[in-house]
Image: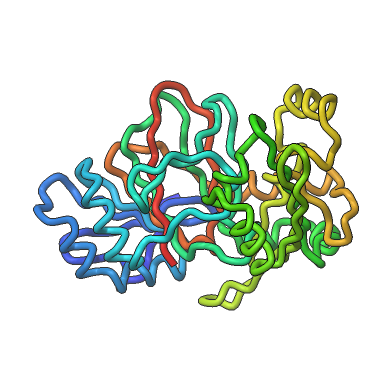
Length: 324
């Protein structure tokens, strides 16, 4: 769809915005054009309007930026303030600078399920910035989904079963998933224990490594709109998110408690895969994706918009920064 956006968002200086998306998820798009001489000046001049678009629609796409890592960093700071470090990690990434990372490094033939960044944690970034350095030959979109619409689309009986929240279980062992050192960004066991205590996580050191568990809500009230948003990563942590062959191989080798990641209902009982299928169906219905072009910069409100990744072929390099 292409829609009409409010006048205060539509015309920002010489740039006319448009609304793209579907009946559930929308993104405000600004094509900056090859003739713009100072992209940072334009962003700084219209920061309040860009943030207003993020607060209403949840996502903004800036197109036709030059391929310039320093410009990306400066736009991040102009719109969102000082970038955040990626802590309590759950997926593999590579640091490009102190505050810019590659997007999740999953195998190219596997999708990354829809999720809100760090929604498994008790702290999360307010805004995410995705910059296309290299577009895939085919596929590789970063679909987004309005978390308000996802909440509404999930059947009430499923929401009821998740009402008390989600328990996230992790097991760290050498050579299987992230190490505890990478996840917690420290080599000091005492620092891990202090982090867990401060963030409401239980921990257990084993002869193979570390196990942790913690409880978080399944949905939140988004502060800018006051609306309910589906805000958890049960679908990504749950063992059923793994490829079937991988899942069967892991379960043949390890007890369920030793899987790298898993998710349970708040009382510790298993999550019915049918309920996760209903969550996935809601994401599938709501989500919207577009083909990346080099120089694209997508900004999302992390509570209003979930995101994922489609499989792809060829080289693909999407860089990510996070702010409060």
